[in-house]
Length: 252
Length: 303
Ligand SMILES: Nc1ncnc2c1ncn2[C@@H]1O[C@H](COP(=O)(O)OP(=O)(O)OP(=O)(O)O)[C@@H](O)[C@H]1O
Ligand SMILES: [Mg+2]
Image 1 (cartoon, rainbow over the protein chains, first blue to last red):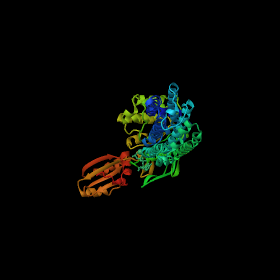
Image 2: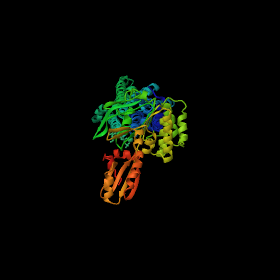
Image 3: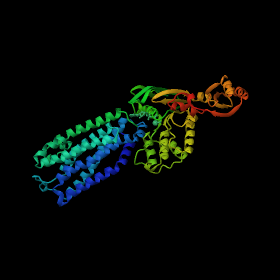
Image 4: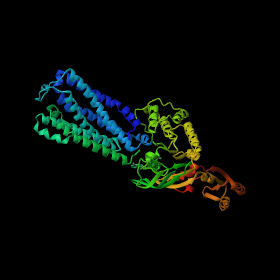
């Protein structure tokens, strides 16, 4: 099922994008969690926005490159002129996409865990919150897991568009609209949470609402049940992308 | 070995392929000729399993090209008509990837071909010239020494020396019993390589002919201009295979077989002749009329 040579090629050709996004996200995380000036905004800005915006841009670009752009350019013909099945192509590319996100969040989480060990954060320091106690390593892991799951769902939807469309134009167009709406609605909904009543309903427009760091910080288990939805959406979208890609006519 | 049966894929506006049928036997080389947009590449795409036939079928070695394409690919080498190599690789990196995708192992064949075509694969694929990219694609197609070769305009973009080199390569492959389907616009190439030639036009197969038969059937056309109308008329009434009798210029064009040449010379000796022009029909001319919308062979003017 998994084609190692193809996986190697995907890792190589996406390494720059992956590296820079991971670098930026990790640096921002370290900055927000260590500098006194920004610590209070660690959750509102960094975990509230950056952990969906940066991976969102990454999956938008990468998902397109993994299928649609190769079909559009014609280079997919070389891969498919070897005994590699189409289903193995989609499996490998989806495997790469998911695991590159896991690695991205893994590195960022590790950095945060280290910073938090050296300079623990009191939840009382956070803006817009009335929580007590310290930010624990477990909480950091849970928040990141919740964010990762949502990002995988975003990735899966982009991957589906990449598998469905034969041209970059439509694949990027649809994925871009999807990611754009998801991120924008998430930001508006966040302002809703912070008190602007009229913006609250935007949370229904975005998958990012299943990412619930507040519940983690408050010590409730809401975030766990919310993992199920993005997981289900991710599975469905990956399956749809695979199915269409395996059956459609490729203009190679 | 390769079987295409009533293959139809209509892209609308009269484009596509319609009821295309042909076979390529084991060890045979079939040339695929036809004007731009005739459907040569489309047929190949169906053989590769990239497109599904709307009706009809394409099989290789008895395996269905759509459903069993990954099985088929173990035996097929494919050279796409348009070279669009993956980004961000060096030539060597590309060949390495292709080798691994084909199951790995040391591939001497590709190495040999690079030497033969004088290509240094160390540079980035992006910076390579069209011909260099095509050489890489050729090396990739022959990798793993496949039994069946599907080559879509293999020599386009190669310089004349390399075209010759390529032709001799295919000749060797034929000797080794490979089955080849080759599309081309270059008659010399088709003439040198193919056992049979299929001509496709507007998505339909016009005819499939034996190359030997065509070569044998080729003959000289001689155009004779006469001094006066009397001689013109007398000669024109003789029993020759006339292609053209033009009273205004007093010229006759006659197809003359080698076996008939003596009779012809004896016949024209008696007349006052103003001009004499010999013209042998090449494969190119034979096929040219399929390319032109005017379908009559005799319509090509020799006068
Ligand atoms: N996926 C597609 N969608 C719409 N039309 C298509 C598609 N694929 C091929 N066609 C049309 O089918 C026709 C045949 O194209 P094809 O590429 O097979 O021609 P060809 O014989 O290879 O020509 P050339 O000598 O220029 O390479 C063209 O008119 C092309 O526009
Ligand atoms: Mg073509």
